[in-house]
Amino acid sequence: MKRVHVIVEGRVQGVGFRYFVQHEALKRQLTGWVKNNDDGTVEMEVQGHESAVQLFLDTIEAGTMFAKVSRMHIEQRDVRPDEKQFRIMYGGGL
Image 1 (cartoon, rainbow, N blue to C red):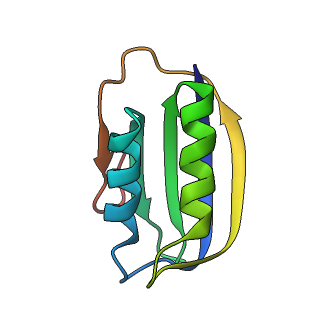
Image 2 (cartoon, one colour; image 1 turned 90 degrees about the vertical axis):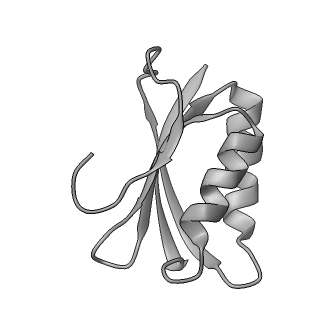
Image 3 (cartoon, rainbow, N blue to C red; image 1 turned 45 degrees about the horizontal axis):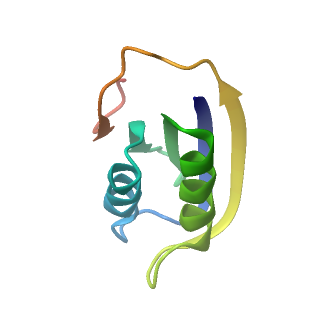
């Protein structure tokens, strides 16, 4: 199992990017969360099997027809074994 914290820069707000992220995470049976930040970035934590996490990150970095990723900052985090879902966060709180 692997967990990463990711900050995504680019055209990633107002283009359905969080829903794209959630769809890709659920498709790969990953858990975690995603949210918009006030500075225009999108932040997320995602965990699952290492190969699934890497495929997820590669897909997210490629973006969509509307979302264009210019940079991703990725840091390793401790796995949370009790986490069971992937959710979109709204507002400032976790």
